[in-house]
Image 1 (cartoon, rainbow, N blue to C red):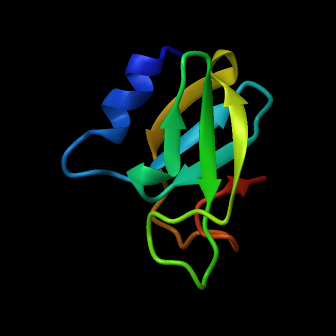
Image 2 (image 1 turned 90 degrees about the vertical axis):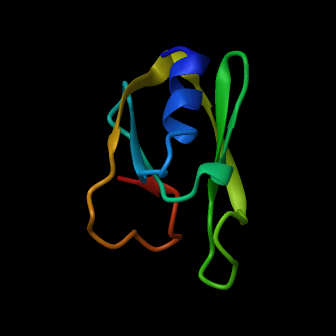
Amino acid sequence: MRAEDVLAELRRQPFVPLLIRLSNGREYVVRHPDLVFVGRSSLNIGTTAPDLPPGVYDRYEVVSLLHVAQIAPAPSTPAAPGGNGAGG
């Protein structure tokens, strides 16, 4: 996936929560656009905590853009514990 493609999804107005699926099947639900930092070859995907306001991450994971297989609207079900981060 190209960085420009990810940025386009994050900048969509109004923002729609995203599901980022990797080539290994791992998934991340992004419920706030400020929780993803797009780099030349990777994404930093922040994970929230229940005691933090929206857009503030507790920790983050680095994901290679080469492994991003799909970006789609996130399911409307409640987020897994941790709010924004990894599912699965």
